[in-house]
Image (cartoon, one colour):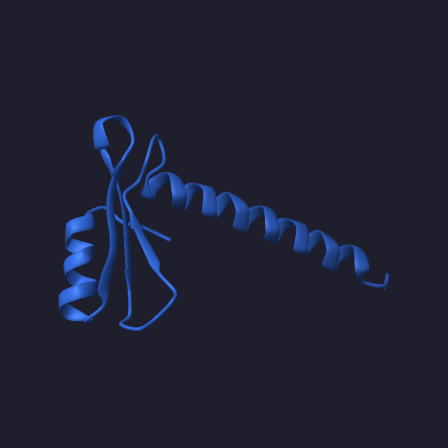
Length: 88
């Protein structure tokens, strides 16, 4: 699943430029305010969901969360590396 800003532009890109098939474009939520969109290469059983951000989530929030997770992993890896080194 990819979170994208403009579902119509994404549909156009995948279907018109890449030749993929539109497999689903279904409204959902309160009064159909959201859309579930899926595209796939012709003949493929796999599908790619193209969804707009929902709620408070957005690209800036995702980058911030990704940085936080990466920083935490890097810090943990650094600590493990430092602790596993023999004393000199």
